[in-house]
Image 1 (cartoon, rainbow, N blue to C red):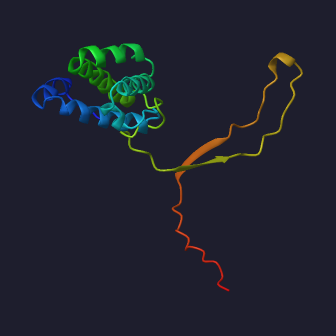
Image 2 (image 1 turned 180 degrees about the horizontal axis):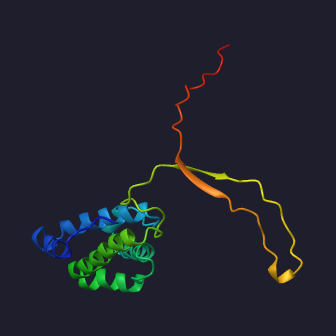
Image 3 (image 1 turned 180 degrees about the vertical axis):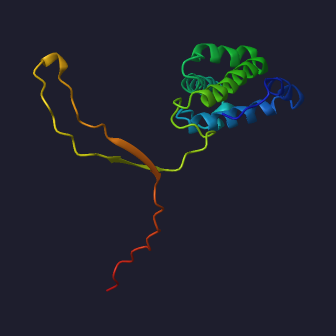
Length: 169
């Protein structure tokens, strides 16, 4: 989710007579849908009473994206009753998602903020085992097998293959 200043999310709708609120809803809806939410088109916001359905679906998306930290009921109440204040609170939760994802890359799959490492091929070098000698005392039995050694080498780059064209009749 994009980091936005919650104060801007609060004050810009007041300055733009609510237009920024619509822009914010559409942008955050698109970002949530990229993360797996299923929020319908924002055109439903302009239809009376159907907009409540849209706000509920949006609230469910907020719950999904925040990992259950923000309940859909609380989000719905924040948006419907508190308006710009509720949007600022929700944006603050969205901003926490970005910092949590940077600390924990397991959240929502791979972390896009972490650079990927080049592929490394790992080979195992095994040595032939030494002769196993039994000692007369079972408490002193030792295993003389050597441990395998692991070496890491960068993977050899592969050359791109030319595209295969089907034979023409």
